[in-house]
Image (tube, rainbow, N blue to C red; front, top):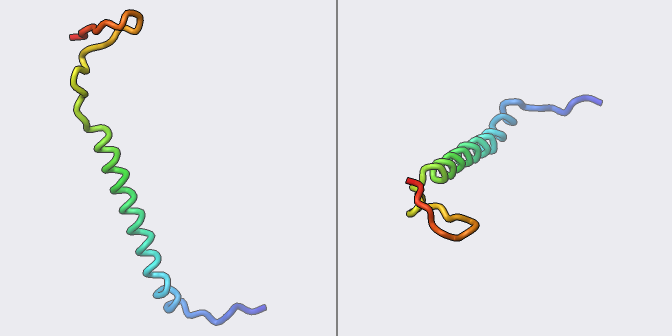
Length: 64
C-alpha cells in the first residue's frame, strides 16, 4: 500500500494554530502555578504565632 499524497507545507500550516494554543496553555499553567506557589509561601505569620497552647492543660505559653 502506498502512502497518500501529502503536502508537508500545508500540514505544517494546519498544525501551527493548535501548537501555539498548546504552548500558550503551558505558559499560562506555569504562570498560575508560580503565582499559587508564591502566594502560599509569601504570607504573614498569623497573629499570636509566638503563643503555644499546652495540650495537657490548655494554658497559653509564650515562646518569645
